[in-house]
Amino acid sequence: MRRRLAVILFVPSVLVLLLLGVSLAGTVARANQQELFLDRLGDASYLVITARQSLLADDPTLVAGDLERYREVYGIGAAVVDQAGATWASNGLDVQEVDERLVALAGRRSDVRESLLPWDVDRIVVAEPVFDGGDLVGAVVTASDAEHLSRGIWLTWGMLAAAGLGIVLLGVVIANRTAGWVLRPVEAVDRAMGEIGHGRLGARIPPSAGPPELRQVIARFNEMAGRVEHLMRRQQEFVSNASHELRNPLSALMLRVEDLALAAPAEHATEIAHVRAEAVRLAHILDALLLLADDANLGADAQALDVADVVTRRVESWRMLAVGHEVVLTTPDHDDTWAVANEIVLECVLDAVMDNAVKFSPPGGRLEVEVGTPGDTVEITVRDHGPGVPAEQLARLTERFWRSPGHGTVKGSGLGLAIASELLATGGGGLRLELPDGGGFRVRLQVPRGAEVAR
Image (cartoon, rainbow, N blue to C red; front, top):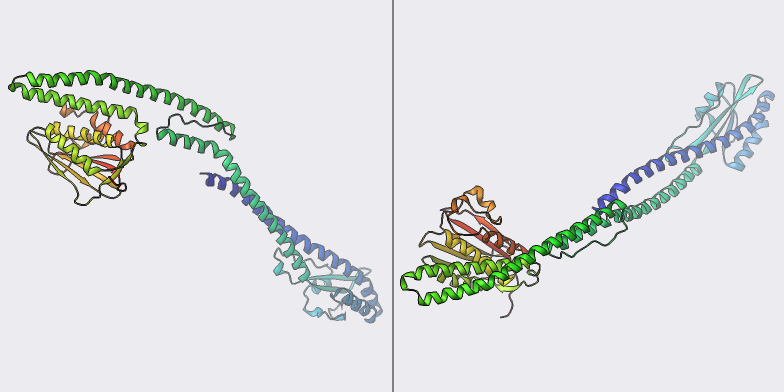
């Protein structure tokens, strides 16, 4: 963005400079040519006096001496022609090849052949008519080599180009500095937003020396960030406090359930098992809420771990909880399932997905858990053979508290997949939901791959 703004500031300046430079170069070339022409015109006017005397006296030698001295001093060819156009006297100039003599013999002074390009100017020709009283008696013609003129024009153009290049470089520096000055507050906002997005809610933008309008934007941004931080802190504190407050009565409830299981008749064992499973599921939800409340530290706690090992341990636990269901685990033969993740987060996410799979599977249903390594991720796939959901509802399953209208009779809070998705995102992973062929539901949990460490 800084480069684009610098270009926007720089290009118009270069175009203006280019137009002015071309115009000035043309003006310089034209001025040099006119200056030389006027100088040669003055010489021709001087020679006209001697030429008139020579033509009237019918003696070419009167002007021949002046023409020869003119060539010796200035190195310029000159000649005098009579009224008929014949060469009267010359210092070496072949005047018959000079078309300008015809203009002078018509009673007019020749004009300079102006050209803006120095390589198009080979010589400067001046033809001055010679009058006696009002009668045309001849003409004086001079022809100067334009090499010196072209060299002067090239030198002037070179100086203009060097000055233009210096101005362009200065313009680049000024445009870059100006763009940096204008965009410095924008870059500060971008950095602060990135830090806030990574959980550092205390990030603020220091006062900047940018434009006044952007300083106001920074002030408003800092105010907004402060309010967001305050609201997020309150939300995290509420979730954390609520989770802690619920944990003690839940622990007491689980102890009473265990005591009840020891004393209850055998025919109530199934009901007690259901109560125990619900209590365990509620404990998992509280763990997830605590993790979400402290999601700023989840990335810092990530470490290299063997996903297959974690999944194997959790699946063994779920085999005991998923009474009446067949849980099948498939892991790679090679030891290539190391990832960078928070172990508690990974266990909590897998528990949430397994809990969903158990709830929505029919009695005796098959749960398939597979660990794979596609690309740069380690992927955990959990597939059940339950009723699934309509395709148009798939995108809403990760919304908090949203539940499919077709599953209203199934117990749940609508938080499982939403929490799983958010927890995975904090560590750079992701969650994908699919409706496989043959019915049921498939969830893919992805975490970044990492190097194996010694255990």
